[in-house]
Figure 1 (cartoon, helix red, strand yellow):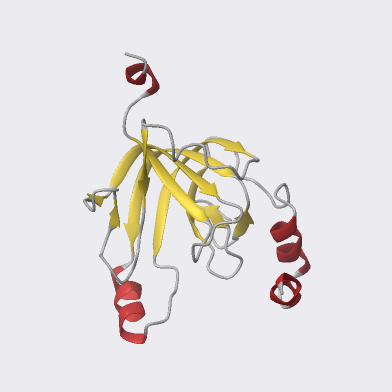
Figure 2 (figure 1 turned 60 degrees about the vertical axis):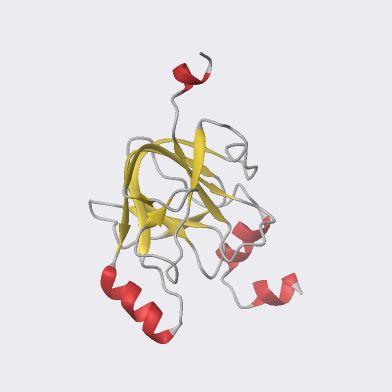
Length: 168
């Protein structure tokens, strides 16, 4: 069954789906836009400024971002709701502070981090675990989660309590 899903994809997409270390990674200090990749069910990223803003890459890893803003494009959001067809209309934009080639989700159990989600049918913004809108965060980790049953395998966590405060 999995082979059938991969058959229609490019060689690079097939390799990324089976090898978590495949694909280019963003450079540290690079400003990027990330979102869940609807077809490959991984993380998609692209440069947020400069010459290669149209070049997209799919990644199976964890990317740490700083100075993050969560953006939703209202026109695409309205189109999704009108046609009931999903498109990418929401991104997290920030500066890369690290990339790890991991697919485990250790941030879900850390009390200093909270999951951030976006569902185009439930709200106009990204939301925190209590349903409150999240527009920005100082530090975020986006994790491509292997084996997830979610529509996309991307989970995003924002730091709610700095490491120095967690120990006290």
